[in-house]
Length: 195
Image 1 (cartoon, rainbow, N blue to C red):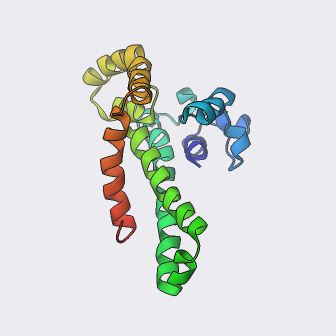
Image 2 (cartoon, rainbow, N blue to C red):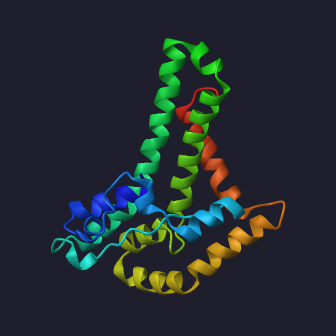
């Protein structure tokens, strides 16, 4: 849903690029990146195929606003998914708690749905290129500050992100986990009573 969110929002602002490539869809296979999928299985960290966006197609006068919302759309999609899983959890707790506590699979499925989507939303908010957070930052900063941010982020962002991932793979302390886990758990506590 994350990539669908980007594609659908770009279309709403006038850019049909993703639609023309069949990316405004819930079909996960359309968003699959082979290398990202292999990394997920072998390293535990992966990615989807980036949604193609052509800002030149955005309606006149809305480019920065459109870029901001297209970037936020994937994050919002993850947050909405986390809320949906939490709502199912809460409804089951109200209607018949034994359904939830009687099924370890259902319990884990819903809990992981909340935790993974919150973690993805927070991770993608990091202002490090190529993550969505860098594009958000670019569009909320005044232009005088956005230009050097973009130059720095595009030049060093991927290296910074890779360094954070590699350090986490080869040490007992993962910088990315430290950045993500605290806010994720706080948000999960708001969504799931007793978490």
